[in-house]
Image (cartoon, rainbow, N blue to C red; front, side, top):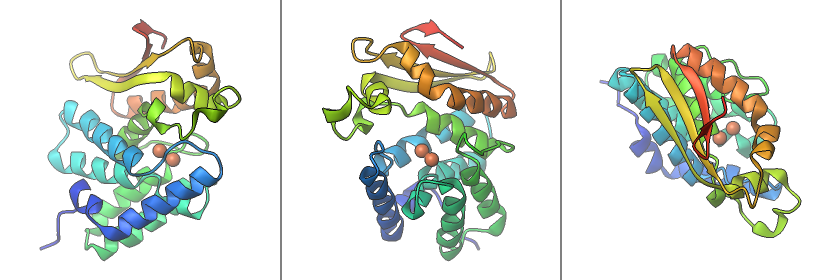
Length: 222
Ligand SMILES: [Fe+2]
Ligand SMILES: [Fe+2]
C-alpha cells in the first residue's frame, strides 16, 4: 500500500524544512520578499481551499496542497526557472517518501508552471496553485521597511494589509480580495507590478471553468 502524502507530512519533514529555509535565505540575499515556510503554508491552504470550494475530490485537494507547499522550493538553486528546478526537487523528495508516480507527475507539472514568465496552467492542480500563489500579497512578507520608499515590490506588499481568495461555486468566480493602504502605495502601483500575474490568474481560473476577479479595497477592478 502506497503512503498518502499530504501537507502535514511535508511540514514535519526535516529535509523539506531545510530546503525551504535555504531557498528563502537565497531570496533574502537577493532582496526578495519572504518565500519560506509562511508563504508555503499560505499557498498550500489557498490551493486546497480553491479546489475544495469548487467541489473537487479530496485527493485532488490534497495534491494541490502538496504542490502549494513545495512550489517555491526550487529557489534553492536560484530564482531563474525556479519552477522547473522546483519540480525536479519535488520529484526527488516525493519519490523518496513513496508517493505514487501518478501523483508526482501532477505536482511536477503544477510547480513547473506556476510562474507567470513561462507557466501555462493546463491542470486543476496547476490552476489552483497559480491562483493561491498570486493571492499571497501581504505586508508580513516584507523583510525590512528600510526600502519601501525605493522598492515598488516592498511598497506594494507592505501596503497590503489583508489578502484573501474567495470562491463562489454557484457564480463560478474566483476572487482575489486585497486591502491596500493607499497612503503607502497607490492601487496603480499594484497594477504596475502585478499585471502579468493577473493575466496568468485569468488563464488559471478558466481551467477551473471560472472567471477571475480582482477586488481591491472593495472595488471590483477586474
Ligand atoms: Fe515562485
Ligand atoms: Fe510563490
